[in-house]
Image (cartoon, rainbow, N blue to C red; front, top):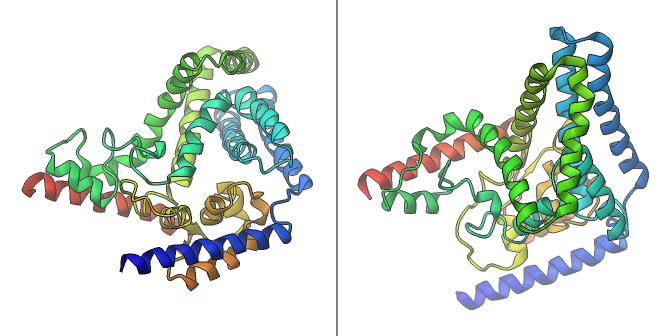
Length: 347
């Protein structure tokens, strides 16, 4: 049986290498500069609109909320775009990707590029592998994730939170926790790693945003405007980033081959113009993890080839609606919470 497994892995890897050669010949790793120009332009327009709204109409309820929605949308779209740049999928030369990523995430979002790349590269290397994927660091302090880890936690009689209710408190607690985590961990990372340029640019972002908005609405109103926008952005980010991973296999590293590791940790959300835009094309999470440097506008082209690869090797290629993907996060959290409670009470 072990020999058959090794043979299957070898066959999968050989077919994947062949697929990789095919997509290179098809030109699917080449970026469409006009596409990314439009992405960059539209996020700049959204960012400008958030300021113009309160500058022109004042801070009564409607322009205040509308401006906040523009600001939130601009920030999340900047996040998706810097993600493209971090994967070197916008320009052919890595240097240009790295430079523009610094502009977007450091100067337009207020987060260090080096911090993001450090965490995100680990996530791609070992997705959903506990102690190796930093996206799982919310376990066990806030949430209990996956059947295996949840049972283990319960048997150890550990209870940092009432995990059997985590599907109820996830909606509010996850984005609330992420906001201070991003703010504090980025500063800690920059100081510890002596990333002084990153730190200076982040401070510059905060000064710039204050100078833009405080004269228009006063400090107190700006605090509401800014931090509520960050909470909304955090909620958007959490639901999109976790819909492809939390419902999938979460466990310790089983030392599987790289392709199998990616396929068992990811799933897709159906394509539509809205889903592509709303998720920054991370609805094609399977293709993104298999080909992390592929420009996002080509995911839909390679998706049928990836599905054929999965079908050939008996690996489920999961595709859901956006709503189902969101519900599956809560369903998965409910299941793992029940596994924890059973082990905690009777293990």
